[in-house]
Structures are given as C-alpha cells and as structure tokens.
Length: 165
Image (cartoon, rainbow, N blue to C red; front, side, top):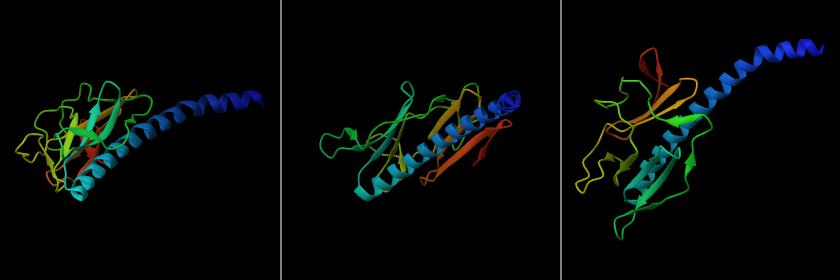
C-alpha cells in the first residue's frame, strides 16, 4: 500500500509543481494589471498624477501619487512583492508586446489626472509603449501593457508571439 502511494506521489508531484508555478506567475500578472488599473482610477478621482513604480532588483511594485507641494511622488500604499520564482524581465525574447517598437522593461508607469498614460515630463505627453514583463524559472513569460487610452492588457508569450489572455 505504501509503495502504491509513493508511485502515485512521484507521478503527480511534477504536475503539481508546474501547476503551482503557472498559478504564481499568472497571479502576479493579474496583480500588476490590477495595480495599473488602480493607478489609472486614482489619478482620475484625485485629479493628480499617479505612478506605478517597478523595482526589478527587489522584485516589487508600488503605487505613488504626485505631491501637490514639491512635485515629488509620495507612497500611495505599500510595496507588493512578486511571488517566489517570479522575476521582472523578458529574457532573450525579442518580440515586443503592446505598442513597443523595441522591447524594453518599463520601470515607472505614469497617469495624468484623466487616467491617460503619459511620459513623466512637464508637458505630460501621452505615451503608448509601456510594457512590464515578468517570467518564472520554468520559462513562462507574461507582458502587461497599456494602450494610449489606458486599457490594461495581459499577454502570454507562446510560440514566438504574445497571446492576449
């Protein structure tokens, strides 16, 4: 009886690990997309600039709001950590996601008071090439991108292209 249990466990364990890994990275992609949507909505509701900052070294993301006095960004909630085994980056992938012309990791996404993604300059020009890439140790890649209107899109890299989720 113990032998049968060991055989069943040894057969199911790799499948369970792959499922858990898949759930961790897809959950992080949804969390980042949710934070971007929250930043967009807060910017519009408070009539200020809101920014999602990415710390690729510490594997965190956090919301910040532009202060009315001094013009710097102040924390608008705590840092959220990526789950174990998940990192920021796109590895050796060269195919771009969203509106990017060349692949690059966005580390700060800024919204104006109307919830439109903008460059963080004094003019506040609209920007449509933000992309946040995450990956895990099993070679799964996700991209969270923004359209010019602020629509958040999650895509998964599959077969050499990005597929909307």
